[in-house]
Length: 93
Image (cartoon, rainbow, N blue to C red; front, side):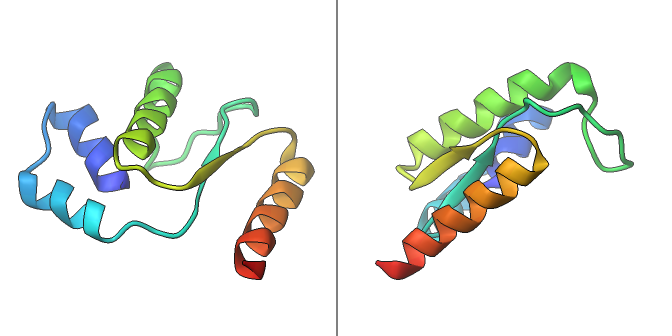
C-alpha cells in the first residue's frame, strides 16, 4: 500500500503490476495514524509541507482498495493503546 501511495505522490503514477500486487496482498487490518502529533524530521521522511496531502492519499488508497483500517490519533500513549486494542480485537475474531 505504501509503495502505491508514494509512487503516485512522487511520480504521478504507479505501474499496474504494483497496484495489482498491492490489491492481492492486503493486510487484514491497517492502522492509519493521524497527523495530530508534532512532525519529526528523519532522513527518509517527506517534508512537513506534504504531511496533510499524504495523509489524505493514504486514506483514499485504503478506501480505493477496500482495505480494513482504523484511524489512530491522540498522544503517543493513546495511539499505543488504540493500536493494541484494534489488533487485539482483530485477533479475537
